[in-house]
Image (tube, rainbow, N blue to C red; front, side, top):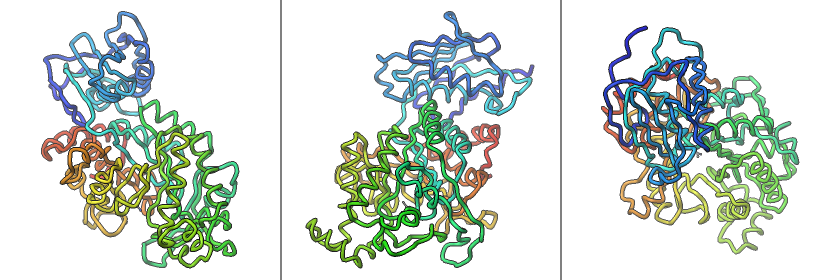
Length: 510
Ligand code: ACM
């Protein structure tokens, strides 16, 4: 068996404190786990993650060398922090809450040789990790990644892999963009046509702003059982799946299924085959609010997430301005104009979620337009994140120039077609501090964190999704967990992280 490699501790994200010690601990077939009450999910995850490559059984035993301990008295570790002590003869992983242990399991995995992450048995590898003392607590509570499965559907088997890769990076929110103009992917029992009609489009635009279409039908929807299973799978990795149901815009697929929900019930629309901003909106009559409540009741049934995203972005209000019914509604509600129906609409639906114990989340385009109880996802400009935080909102800074992974990673001719309009380079992702410049301490405290966005107009296959996601997500995860780090420090850790991505066969950008 080859000698263990020299001691190098290179973790991504970077832990708060790590002190290397001399020596190694080596896992073998007889290495056992002592699992304290409440630590079972961490033991299960460690076994699941290490089994394919190592074949280690990691049996339970009282006098085991590896201890997974839950200790609620360790309050300084918060809900996700953990302490890890690796000595030559023992490993002790401790946390105040189960989620902290799940984060620590990912650290143990990263301390092992990269072959430990492979999907098939690896022979002749010594499963050693360097002796180390780690205390690790995330800087930000919200470390998210959004995947748009509306523009291009992905099977739930791939979503599980996506979640696995997020978990490796200690991401804690998987934001699933389930509905848009081009497809509705979640079944709702009371409105079967949402998926029967709304999940299929005739073809897709090839380039934004052109009339070139590919002539290839696209479609797909999840079953309720698949989504519930995904929620459980993610929870076992310490990840919340936050669903997004877009309204009042980005609803063309729903209107194709149920024209009476729109502003022109007489008009038959197709599921949109173009990319860009669509003018069609939900109407503002009571049938529409019944629809929203029924859909969200089913969404809340499937997704236990404390947060429910209801979109709110890119909502041209022309249809409301042209509709006598919408104009009357605005007048009756005492609004200054039909455009103000946007906030009124989101306020009504948001209040429904709040009454049901969930927090509404919305995209913001100014930072000050969403109702008070919304968590604001500021995507256009960091100034909007600042404005929202100063107004008292909790904020997720999702600035498109640093977190939109649908943009290409370089301007080079080797890049595949991607979202036109900007380049989001690795270095720019790394430099994006979620706390906007000029934030007061109170406003800064309301910045929950940041998240990556992967809109999929130009990314149809898992290979393309991973090429766009990695290694940029490694930079975003590092920043969200550790806060800003030196570029050279990040780069050297990324160089040692890449073999892990390669062991997992991630189709990353070079
Ligand atoms: C968005 O990019 N429309 C949120």
